[in-house]
Image (tube, rainbow, N blue to C red; front, side, top):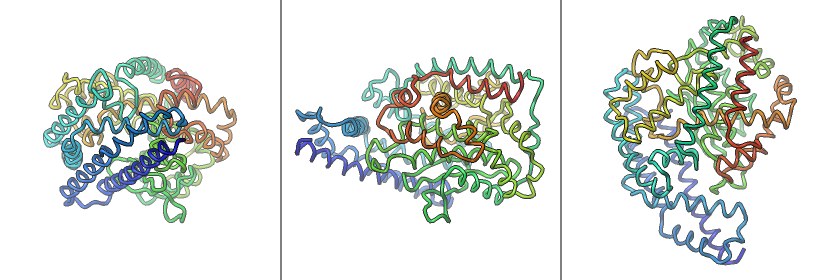
Length: 512
């Protein structure tokens, strides 16, 4: 690399490192807001986060950053940069171009409103009062509409909503998602019909056992230990587990934290939230250390992230192979609450399929229907075809049509998720995309290591994790998700492997 080009590249990575460190700081401050912060601190925290986001924005859009990018891209020997170097500067430029078009006041206003909206959502959800939440949600939606209008020009998207989706799933469009989701929904509805009419149905009542939060925490520690996610008091821990209203994962490389929620009468809920969030954490912690402070040292997309969380939660976490060696240890941790739990009945119960109201409690077959509903609503909101005041009614109608369930109140309906209160518009589609990707990953893993399930039954995850590291983790953000999926699995985005996985699995469980 020529000296002056190398110097500019080195300087821009030094600046990006500061941005990455600041971003990790913001993440931990937000983690504290959701876990340890006292209620009275909300207003102060909104100001703290607003200031941090403003500083972040200024760092990412500084004139020096612009000059360095200009120097690199216009250098006559730019093409001598290798694949990693080009991807780094391309990602920095993409972010620079987007952020320079967003006024810093709008950025800080969105962050401030997110903090207020989340706090109001918590109160409104507890009181089952959408009217309390609606004004703050409307403010946040309108602010994001302003940002989307600006960004669609920079990102060259056809509609504002695509500009928001691009944050979470680069180069993906609402139109492409609609086509894929159409195929997915058709396949899921056919499978659901077979399951509904199957003569052999699981007994889900065996999961309705009282397990105290302290015992559930012991179970969680067993799960995390099995998957290789270390938490204190381990001296080499790079994570931790805490309780919050809505489970999430946040952090950066050596400090990646997960949360769960303990329901004394629903012990399985925490099991699967811990498995899900651990999947996210393992992906973050598995990214290449040599890329730690570089743009390529991040997760590829939220869809890829969700492919990992759903893989650990469902493909591994709901399999008989996983629980064969683990269930005795879990029973010991929860004793005597689960002493009478039998492996076969437990496996059938945790894989029971029944349309429900709550997304995070949904089974594998109906889960994506929850996501499709949210995607359809978001798309219409940002196309100005649906107002915030109409959301509860539209939500309830879609749930009745798609899942056949009646929503009794808005806390189990439109206010059940934190995403809209947090301003994560465009995020929801990535959950279903993650499921679809996971189907392709299963097929590729099976081809690479036909013995992976029998290894899992022995409590051995080493070869599966090694394959995931080679195919996905080690590539970080070197490619856009569509390219990464094809490189990792050998096929472009397709719903067929995921639907095939579900068909085979539930045919065995339900005997249709």
